[in-house]
Structure formats: structure tokens, C-alpha cells
Length: 262
Ligand SMILES: NC(=O)c1ccc[n+]([C@@H]2O[C@H](COP(=O)([O-])OP(=O)(O)OC[C@H]3O[C@@H](n4cnc5c(N)ncnc54)[C@H](OP(=O)(O)O)[C@@H]3O)[C@@H](O)[C@H]2O)c1
Image (cartoon, rainbow, N blue to C red; front, side, top):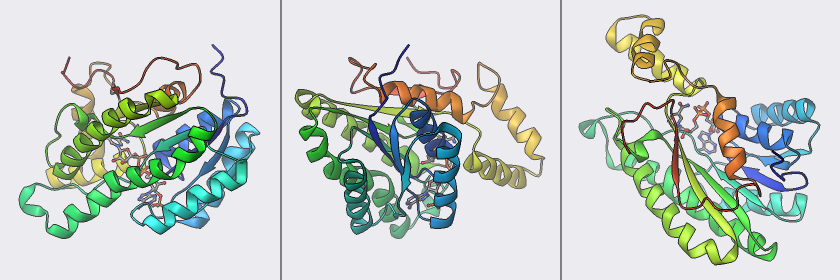
């Protein structure tokens, strides 16, 4: 299937590593021109060069902290300027810290709101004029399986990913007349740097090896293993592409069947 991504322009946030990087790579491989962003400029520049080298696509970058409105404004302006407009926005963010209710102070709640909800609001607000001018677009949000089922010890994710899901659904309704399709992806357990550090933390807390923690998690996944960033990215690339003409307002899990929800 031709996804129709050749010549399209995409902005992918939080993309120097992990899922964001995999999505940017997949979009680039399919012929899109991509601007990636994250905080650490050196890592970001290296990633942009590597994706460009691997795919032959034009890959730009700009450092931005997604918790800062002025950084997001400058990022969107840079992407529009670089490619003349934006067809695709992939809203990815860093993950909020783990913690139960008693572990979280006002500062943690405030930061997680800015990280997960306000960053999406600001990115969408930034790209809308360009998408409207171009006659449509695709917005893909990266959230978590917590959009369908809360995860123990991840209260911030459980709260704000659910909020993101509600916001995304509302946006899909408001933006459908503009030809802008909005969907949210919920990764289950995809092997990235974040999963590695979460597993290492669990291993330390339980006094077992990282391998044992992985086996415990994998045993709860019907497909019996963690997913790869590439498997995740292929779903994102479809949703972000013109080949997706009729899926909008959905929260789709990429979790190997882990969440037991209809
Ligand atoms: N991997 C999974 O299985 C899984 C499962 C559920 C949910 N998720 C969620 O999916 C998202 C991506 O996860 P991942 O596994 O790919 O994480 P990752 O490997 O840790 O990568 C996170 C990326 O986000 C960037 N980032 C972090 N904070 C940022 C900020 N304030 N502003 C801009 N960029 C920022 C990082 O670069 P800098 O640090 O340089 O900014 C990096 O590029 C996270 O929200 C995570 O919670 C992942």
C-alpha cells in the first residue's frame, strides 16, 4: 500500500529517541520531509543526521522544551518556515514520573499538565493555520495504554493521558470539517530507553534482575513479548498518512493485546 506520504511535511516532537524517533524515521522512509524536536540539541542533531542518512529524506531539527510555550511557538515557526507548511503533527512527549497519590506534590501535577496537555494544546494551536491553509492534515498523539486502563504507580499518566484522550476526541469533532484527522496511540510495552529505565527501577525495587521483570511483564501480554519501536511507528505512519482517510477521533492501543478492554 502506498501511504501517500511522499512530499508531505511532518513535525514530530520528543523525537531524538524512542517512539518519536521511530515515527520520524518511518515517515521519512515513506518520503515525508520531517522536522524533529527534543531538548538536548547535540543528541537531536545526531538523530536528524542519522535519520536523513538512513532514509535519504530531508530532516530538520530544532531544540525545544515542550513545557515552555515560547519554545513551542519557535519550533512551529521553524518547521513552517523550513518546509513552507505542515501536513502532519505527531505530538509525542517525555513520560511523566512514576508515583502513587502520596508521592506527588503540586509541582509534579503542574509539570505533568504542562508536559502532556498544554504542550498538545500549544502544538495544535501552532500548526492549525498551516493545516487549514493546505486544506487538511493529520494529528497523531502518542499517549499510553493508560488511556484505556490505569497503570499502578503511574497516577500522572493515568490522569493526564485520559484528559488528552478527551481533548483529542473533541478536536477530532471540531477539526473534521477542515479535513484534519486526529487520533491517539496508546503504547503498551515498547522497548525504548524509557522502558529500560522503568524496568531497571522495578528490578531494583523488587530485588530481582531486569530479565525477570521483563519476563513478568511479557507474561501479561498475549503476544508474549514487548513491541518494537518500528512496529509502533508503522501504525503511527498509517494514521498520519493520506492513506488514512476515514479513521479519526480514535484511541488505538499498540500493546500486543495487553489491555483487557473492549
Ligand atoms: N515505550 C513505551 O512502552 C511506552 C509505554 C507507555 C507510554 N509511553 C509514552 O510514550 C512517550 C515516548 O516514550 P519513549 O519510550 O519513546 O521515551 P524515551 O525513549 O525516553 O524518549 C523520550 C523523548 O522525549 C524527549 N523529551 C523528554 N522530555 C521532553 C520535553 N520536556 N520537551 C521536549 N522533549 C522531551 C527526549 O529527549 P530530551 O530528553 O533530549 O528532551 C526523548 O527524545 C512517553 O510519553 C512515554 O511515557 C511509552
